[in-house]
Amino acid sequence: MEIDPNTLAAEESYKLLTGIVVPRPIAWVTTMSPAGVVNLAPFSAFTFVSPKPPMLAISVGRKGGRYKDTAYNILSGEEYVVHIADRPLVEPLHLSSIEHPPHVSEVEELGLATTPSHRIKVPRLAAAPIAMECRLRHCIEFGETRSRLLVGEIVAFHFRDGLVQNGKIDTRALNPICRLAGPRYAELGEIINMQPVHQTPKS
Image 1: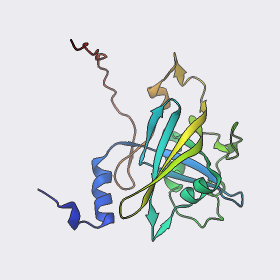
Image 2: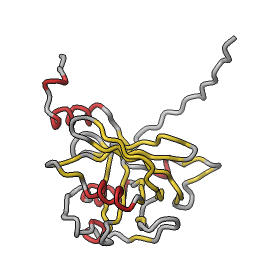
Image 3: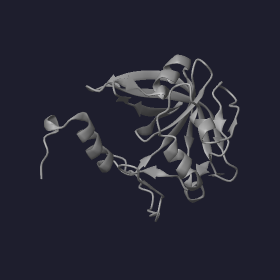
């Protein structure tokens, strides 16, 4: 079977890509509007792009010709927090994808507790096992849909006690939630351990 991408509408292409690029980590993002409303939304077009300084990228699309509140708030205040959710948080994670008017706080709607961040004004979720305070560094638009790739520098890491062992994350203890296509999520399942690959110097 072959599909010509030029024959696909944006939504059709989106459905295919979100079924191909799986599993995806989820950035659960808190932002603050100019009026002080704390917004919360999940984004699975998400990765890190630099280790020094540590930088994360999330892609925020448009719906009905309008960017999501997250994009507006980040471009306005240039501060946000990226969280990693674990299994107990999958329900509020999913429900936070429901679109509300800008004056409605998803954090309040879901009854989630927050705690002040240390370097930025935007609060972080108290229950999340990992939270990363970020400041916006780059915004790049892509494609006909003008999806915005927002790249932020992590200015503070927060970890639940016991997650970091010898400078590394204990993945089993974290038990992060990943995104599949549609309203489907998954846990890690079996972890396959391989021997480290050592590069042979070229002569």
